[in-house]
Image (cartoon, rainbow, N blue to C red; front, side):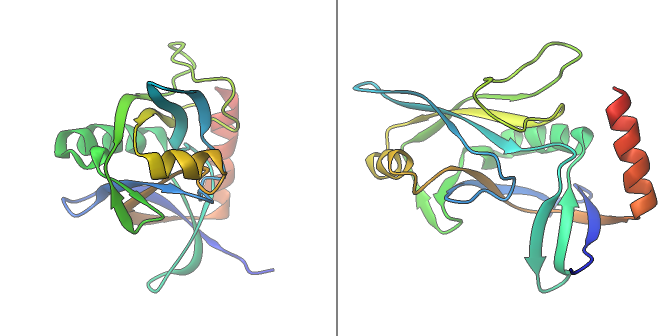
Length: 179
């Protein structure tokens, strides 16, 4: 089994951050969207956008096979900066085809301490994760969601990486489990 390096994803400069949100068949965060409503008025789905403290497998030319993790503070920065830039309102399918007919109608960060909770039908949601509620009028996307060809959200973006050792990861894990 290949030993994968773990990196904390961060926003360190102006080039870092979200470029768009992509509706995908297999979200890297391994947590799927949930259909809230589908009627003549349109479709509403809840979906995790990014999970806090979870390993996300990546592969690219610079780092090869590796895992990344987002911590809540970085997720807060992502939410704010992508809303300010408008990039959180740019959507595509499978990181390729830009689409219209999607509106992010609710966006929040889960905070157990302050009781900012999520739709319980969503699974694997950790404290500090980013959740979105989307109104969908795009008939092609609606059809793909109903046919299970689209199951979740993936972010397109650029992030700085900070390597983390196994010892530091275990310490972080222990700290998070105390909360």
